[in-house]
Length: 160
Image 1 (cartoon, helix red, strand yellow):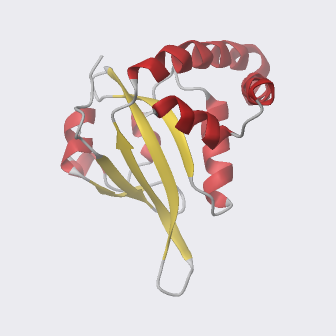
Image 2 (cartoon, helix red, strand yellow):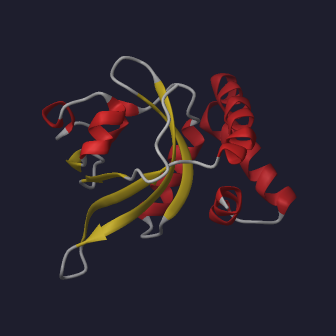
């Protein structure tokens, strides 16, 4: 398991289809890919199998609706190692206000937050194996309803 440093920021940009158009050096170093191996590829080149599909569905639904999202993501390196990030993803617009892609900044996640997120994601992934994305979404929705908060509010509260 790799760990981001406290002052590291992973930055990437994608087009509207999620293909990488920009990656910073820390992204390349953490993921063990060269710029040439990343640019033009789907961002999910770093998707780890322990990441619930329901979280990515929520992410896409929100950014496609011109909303930002905060979330925890476990990524996979080129050689299969894992690393956690605390991510903020926002839509990007051109000077005329037309959405042209997405911008993501990731930083070191709070270790105490990961103690909550890791078992939650494990439960969601297990549910998704038999019940699909809807089963993972149901677990997440029930948790948020129980806590009486929205997704971003829940995630941000864990990062503090």
